[in-house]
Image 1 (cartoon, helix red, strand yellow):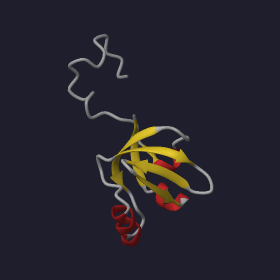
Image 2 (cartoon, rainbow, N blue to C red):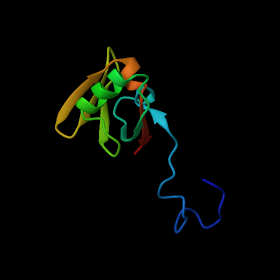
Image 3 (cartoon, rainbow, N blue to C red):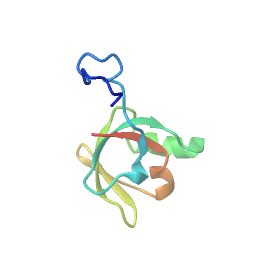
Length: 92
C-alpha cells in the first residue's frame, strides 16, 4: 500500500493501518470491524453502545434498505442512516 518493495510483512504500521469507512457505506454482505464511534450527540452514542456496537466488534451487513441491518455475533440490529453514519469501520 505504501509502495514498499517488501510489502506489508514486518511493516510497523501494517497491523494497525486501515482505510476508514462508515457503516452506512458498506455493501450488503460485507464484513467489517468497528474502529470508533463518531456519533453526533450523546444520545446517539448511548444508543450505539446499548446496541452492542463497540470498538473491536466484528459485524456483517445483512441488508441496506429500508434500514441498515447488521449481524453482530448472534444478534441482528437495525440502524437508520444517521446512526449507521456514526460508526467508523474497517472492511474485513
